[in-house]
Image 1 (cartoon, rainbow, N blue to C red):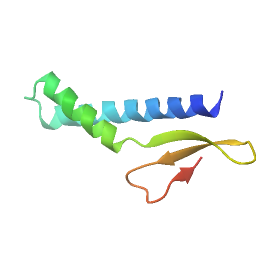
Image 2: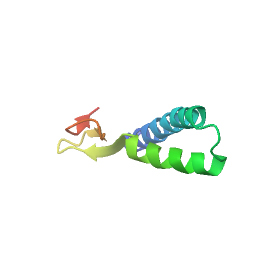
Image 3: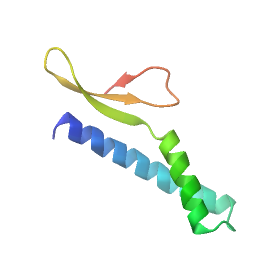
Amino acid sequence: MSAKGRAFLLNFLCFGVLFILIRWGVLYFFPNLTYMIAFLITGILSIILAPRFAAFKKEEGKEVILMKWIFLKNIREL
């Protein structure tokens, strides 16, 4: 699998896991919210909190995956 494909898969998995966890939390703490409002809150929080992955080609021709996250100061190479 190419680095672009792995980066896309990591983006999708991290967003999905965070979406489900935040959704359970929102519906647990605020059970009277309508599902549409809960999904909007969950989606916005997941977009903000999910790490971003990107494929990058180095000068040597090697492809690496870079991760940027709101909780980390620098960009990390995976």
